[in-house]
Image (tube, rainbow, N blue to C red; front, side, top):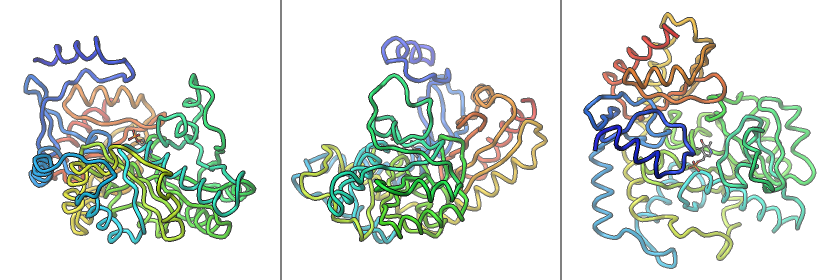
Length: 393
Ligand SMILES: *Cc1c(COP(=O)(O)O)cnc(C)c1O
C-alpha cells in the first residue's frame, strides 16, 4: 500500500475519534521513522512516550519474539516467569512492595483508585471514599478516570460520571490543606502534568502533599503513566522529587511499545487488593512482561544519567534558537514542553510536513517525548527542523 491508501482505508473504517496528521508510518529504526513512500521523519514523540527504547531495538525485539515463541499467555489462574521477574525487578529498583499488572494507563489508575477506596473501607468503613486530583490533570478516558481528570472539557456527553472526585489547584498548599479533609481517601497527582501542558509541580507543594497525606492517612497516588519508566531521568519521577508515594501507576513506556501498565503499592497498602477484588484477563501478559524486562535492562542507571544529559542538551539548544514565538521551556529528562504564543497545533503540523514528529499539550505547548535512547545525531537533525519551524511561527 502507499500512504494515501492507508489513510483512506483508515478513515473509511475506523471510528474518527482522532484528528490525525496525514502521516502513515511503515517502519522505524532508533528514533527515525519512514512512511510507505520512503519519506523520513525524526521522532520526538515515541508514540506518546511509549516506544521508550526506540524502534527496532534488537534487545527488545529479541525478548518479545523469544517469549512469543515460548508462551504468549496463560490466565492469571497460573504462574508465569516474566511477570514474576518483572515485579521483583520493579520492587528492587523502586523500594515499593507489591505490583498489580494491567494493560493501559487508565486501567492502572482505576486499580489505584479501587485500592485507595478499599484501603479506607477496610480501615474506616463506608463513606471515606473521595479522591482529590489536581486542576489541569489527566488520568485517562474511562468513565471513572475521566471523572478523575481535572479538566472541564473532559466532563461532557458521558453522564453520569463516577462520583467522589474533587479538584484542587496545583501548587496551592493552602487549598490542598483544605481539600484533604473529611471523606477523602486519596490524593492522585501527576508530578509533571503531561497532557495538561508539561507543567511540573513545585517541590514545596509535593513535599506538603506527602506530609499532609501521611499525617491524615490519605493515600498518595502518583500517576506516573507519562513520567515513569525513565522519562524524567530516574526510573520513576517520584525519586527526582525525593518522595515515596503509597501507590504509583505506570503504563506508556513500560513495555517499549506493547500494551502494558500497572500499579505498585508501598508497604502500608500492599495487601489491600486480595483474591477476587481486582483482576485483568491480559494483565501480566508474558510477552509484554518480557518486553518490559528488556526495557528495564536497557534503562540502567547509566542510561538514565544520559537521559538527563540529553534532556538538558535538547532544552539548551531550543533556548538558543532565535524563535520569538517561544515564551517558556519546561521539563525534566526527556519530557519537554515549549510554550508558544502562536498556534501549537500549527507548529506540530508544520514540523510533520518538514519531517519531524512532535506532540502538543495543554492550550499552548509543543511537547517533546523522544525515545529515551535517541542519538545526538538524531536530536540534532530534529532540532534543525524544529528551529526552521519555530523561527517562522
Ligand atoms: C496517557 C496517560 C493516561 C492514560 O493512559 P492510557 O494508556 O491511554 O489509558 C493516564 N495518565 C497519564 C498521566 C497519562 O499521561
